[in-house]
Length: 365
Image (cartoon, rainbow, N blue to C red; front, side, top):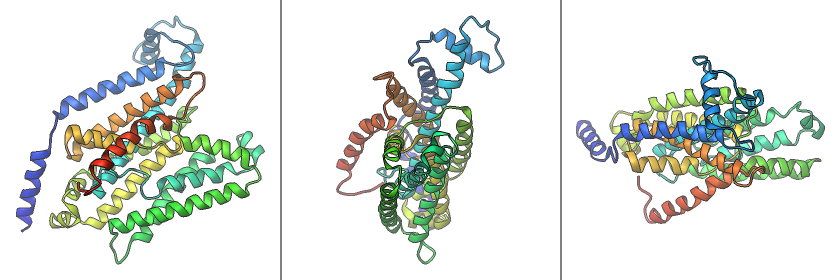
């Protein structure tokens, strides 16, 4: 019985495995990512020639030594102002996209996204707690660094709480997990509203929190990129190791169990990895929606359902998508910067409605 199921499983993945050659898509995405990074650094309030940017970036590697024929201020703008923001946007996009792949694979539903089981409300509550600290202390910068930290821990703890509530008798049914996520989301939003209502600095808090909730890569130094990048690299490595389990989940939990997969253990691992990636992303970007929904589903249409290809493709595409969205947010009505979430929602919302329309009768993977 197990051998027949395994054979059917392998044949089904081979039949559906590729829409386009994987090497072609991954190569094109890698090139597009380099171009997106260059465009992100190139455009801004101050025009910098592309040739100068290339020489500055090559010099920064230590392998090249072009003569510095440009103003030192230009080098500071490129390396210390624009580049951290662009790299941060790429890390956030990659993290949300990979998390989206994990949750969609586990739930067998392309409409799932990284914020589905409480991550967003937990992060928002953590940020709200940071923002209601004394006004003078925030202005002086004494506690401002707590915002990403509390957002991160809020996101992780809320997901773990949802998982603990949904787990019954050693199992975590998907429906129970989703229902618990909806309830905890509502409770955390209510707590957040209560905190903001009784805060003595409500007006300042609401303005600042609104900017954070609207989404935007708030990176001013390289250190946040290094910290978040570490989480993203480790998270992607773990997600890559889970690719076989994600493929097995495509048969449903019973089918995966017939293949010898320890379903509950892998379900917990997927939730933990996806939540850590999402929490790391929101800690420096706020709540940027639809990236984890649109990108994985698009890559699945191009490459098929094999997660060993889907994960790197989604990471590259997510980084490209958010870098370009951040570029538009910074340049459309410059010098004013729009929330990045505006552009991701304008693209993601119609796409989500399209998916919802085409899956309203039966949610099947």
